[in-house]
Image (cartoon, rainbow, N blue to C red; front, side, top):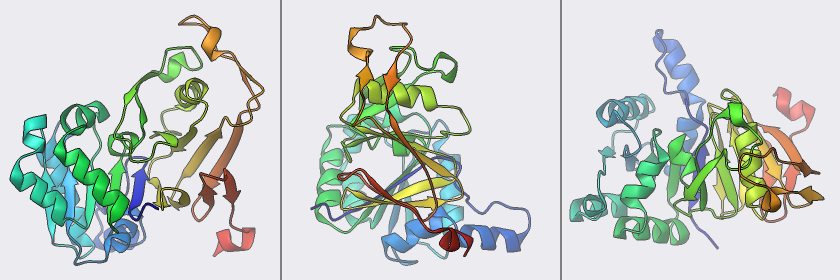
Length: 284
C-alpha cells in the first residue's frame, strides 16, 4: 500500500496575494496550500519547491516562499534542476531525502520528465512516496507530470480529433489516471477525452484552477479548492473508434461516464465510485 499523499492541483491556486492583508490571510488560510501544509505535518514541515517546469524559476520560487510564509512555514527550499546530471547532485538528493513535502511548480511538464525522469532523484522520489508518509504536490504542469501517460499539449480548438492531443511518458506516480489542468478555464474537454480514448484503461481527471485532489494510498481522492473536478471514466465504453481511425479524423465515443465533482466530494479510483456530499453538507 502506498503510504505517501499525492496532491495534484489545477493551477492558479490562491497564494494570498490580495491587496488587503485581511483578505490575504482569510483566503490562503482556507485554501489549497493550507491543506498542503496540514497534510505535510504543519507549520514546521520541510517543504521543497521544485521549479524545473518554470521559465521564470526565481520568481516562481519566491512566490511560493512568500505564500508558505503567510501560512507560518519557514523551512522552505527551492530547487531548479536543469539537467539529469544536476538532478543527481548530492546536495539535491539530500534536499529530497529530508523534505516532508515536495511541491512541483507549473510551467512545462516536459521539462520535468526531460531533466528528472529515470534519474536517481526520480527513483528516490518514487521510493519515498511509496514507503513514507510524505506529500508530493504539484500544480498545473507539476500535476500533469504525475501520470504515467502524460499530456504534453493539444489545442482545445482541435478537440476530439485523433492525434490532436500530444502525449509522452510521465513520472508514473499514479499510473491509473491521466491528469489535465486549467481544465474549465481553457476548455480542455476534448484533449482529455482523446487521451482516455487512446488509453481506455485509465481514468481522466480534469482539474479546474484553484482546485485539487488529496489522494491517499494511491486510490482515495478528496476534492479540495474552489472549483470543479471532471472525471472521465471510459470503463464502460460501448463504442470507441480510436484504434481504427487515421490521424486528423474526428473521434466517436459512446457511454463515456462523466462525473462533475466539487469540494468535499470523493472518488475511489480502484472501484470507480463517487461519494458526494449531501446538499446540507455543501451548504455548511
